[in-house]
Amino acid sequence: MLKLTQFVVLALAVCHFGQVLAIEGGEPAADGEFPYMVSVRDSRNNHICGGTIIGDIWILTSSICNTRSWGGYVRYGSNLLDDNGQLPVNDSLNIIKVNYSMYNEWASDLPPYTHDLNLIRLEEPIQFSETVQPVQLPVLDQEWPYNQTATILGWGKPHYWRSQVHLQKANVPLYTDEYCHDYEFENWKIPDVFVMKCGGVVNQTFHCFNDYGGPVIYDGIQYGILSYVYNSADAEYVCGQFPSIYSPVSYFREWIKEATGI
Image (cartoon, rainbow, N blue to C red; front, side):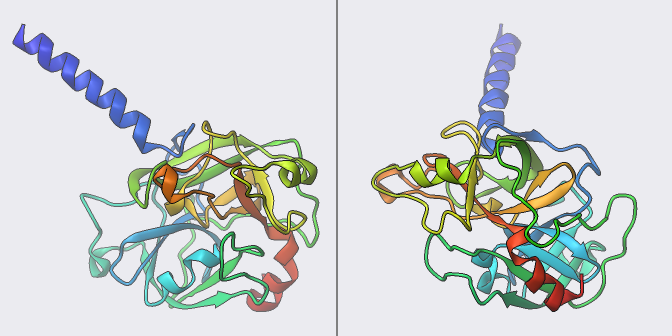
């Protein structure tokens, strides 16, 4: 009887644990499924944001991660955020120090961080392999894939500034600009809607704080960056109350080319 009770308690704990860990509505990504995904880290090697490899020394992420990545690191080539806790920087073969972070001139310093995009230059090049590859970017002004289903990636938890160990993926619908413009919650709407995009399913499928900078992928191309998450202190900073907000990469394609040559 004791063994049966222990089993039931363990099963319930696993079920609850599984519910709170994922990007809401997501599931663990397969090994090597997204070879361009990286963890952007602060100077103490703590995960702060997602990002993608666009070149051997260049990472694409969110402007929200800019100052927090100064003196920080990028981990690549693994779906695991940490191996038995935070990785020792000097002992890891897949962590590279950030050289500098480039803040685009149109980005806003205040929520909801419109024109959100940031570039990170690494101190040394990433060695590409079967499980480490750059992501494909859209061309300049390539149309956003309205009314399609895209994939988002991240390590963030659905609640608060916390992370989980295994990379999560989730499929989300992408809405029209008109839908995003008309959507209102607690008297809040997306400003500059014809720059920023939106998607996800309210309270069902969405990203959260430590997912900032991760990609929005459709047909193998990174069309967007996971951007601002609307939340309020009254709701205990829980994510998912408003459609997820994305920044369109094609809008910044010329700036990316000028800055990186990519």
